[in-house]
Structures are given as structure tokens and as C-alpha cells.
Image (cartoon, rainbow, N blue to C red; front, side):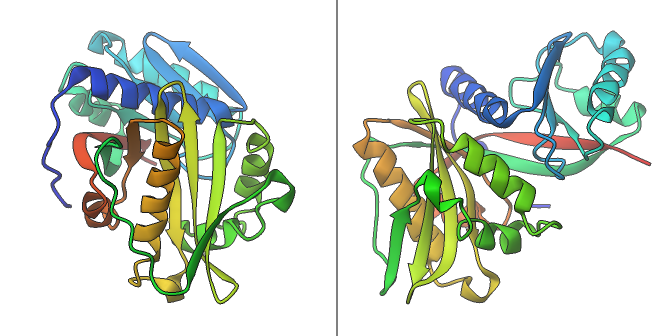
Length: 263
């Protein structure tokens, strides 16, 4: 597993990022609950990365009770889910206690930040056109790269419908696609809340990988956010996207550890 060096040590920036991530999931949520400083959010999409419970500062003596409560909450939705240890979770040895409760590490995800007041490199691959989608588009093209990039089992239909619905919230979500010769090759989402933006769902069709499409789309979304007056930009990266985002100016401020219940 890749080790992600922490490059930013700023508690206020970290707190902004965590709040933005929580608000992103809440915008998609069908239900949520808070229990003993653990915030559980259910979207009902078939992914453990979209049904999450964030740990705050907890009493480890209550770990068993917390895990049972969160398990019961998600049992109503019949979806995979995960417990998330964030840079602000405490105590630091939470993973040890989760292992005792039969949870295993699913993935460690770098949390990254970029100050948009700095210059943004933007050199488009020849022929690539990026456009913002309207809610009336129903995101039928937007979902195609996401299906391939994130291997959605249902063709991404549930995720598409959810995002079509939440895209109607003016000033909160913007959805984009990149096209080559009229064919959609990449897609992405810009989430805007308070004085912060987050980039989500950057995906490229398999046949179009390693051509710079995802990099340019990321830079385009950064430029859109900057033009709208935002300074603080966050994202959670996959291991494969880590070097791309660093090339775009993002730096790691922490790592989110996703844990799932072992069978």
C-alpha cells in the first residue's frame, strides 16, 4: 500500500475539509444519525464509500456499543458501509479497537487540499472539450465514465438518479463531462458549500486513460471554482489518482481510513 506523506499541518484547514466531506454526504443522504460523536450517513447506494460513519473523538470503552449502534442503523438499508477514521478522529489507536470489533481496513485514502489563489496550470489535450451539464440532461452521459472508473455493478443507474436529483439544488452541485470528437471520455463533479469546494467523481473511460483527460478536467473544475470566488479546494484521492492531483497542485493534509465489518 502506498504511503502518503502529510504535507499540510493546519488544524483549521483539516476541519474545513472534514466539514465539507460531511456536508457532501449529507447532501446525498436518505438518512443520518449522530451517536456518541460518530456521524453515520446513509445514501442507499451500493458502495461502502457512500454509506459512511465518521469517527470524532470517542471513549474507546464505548466502542462495542458504538459499533453495534452503527451496524443497526445501516441494517435498515441493506447496503455495504464503512467506519471512517479521519485525521481528526481520536484517540490515535482507534484502528486497534476496531480490529477487536472484527472490522478490517478496506482502504486508506489521501485527503488533499489546494489553495486556488495560486496559479492553475491548464493545457487541454488537443480536441478535448469540457462542458457543464444542465439538470435537464439527466446525467446520462456523465455516468458512463463513472461506471467504468468505479465499476458500478448496476450500470450506475442508482447513482445517476441520485445525482440528477441533487443537481437540481442550485449553487451546490455542478456536473461536467469531457468529450473527444463528440464522445464522452471523462466526467466529474464540483460540490460547493460555504467558502469551500470539493472535487468528486473524476473518472475516465478505460479506453481513454493516460491521455491527460482526467488531469485537464480536474484543472478545469479548479478554474471554475476559482472564477466563482472560492479559495479552498478539497478532494479525496484514490491511490491511482494521487500523482495526478499532486500535478494539479493538491497536497496531502491527512488520510481517511475506511473499515468494514469482516464476515
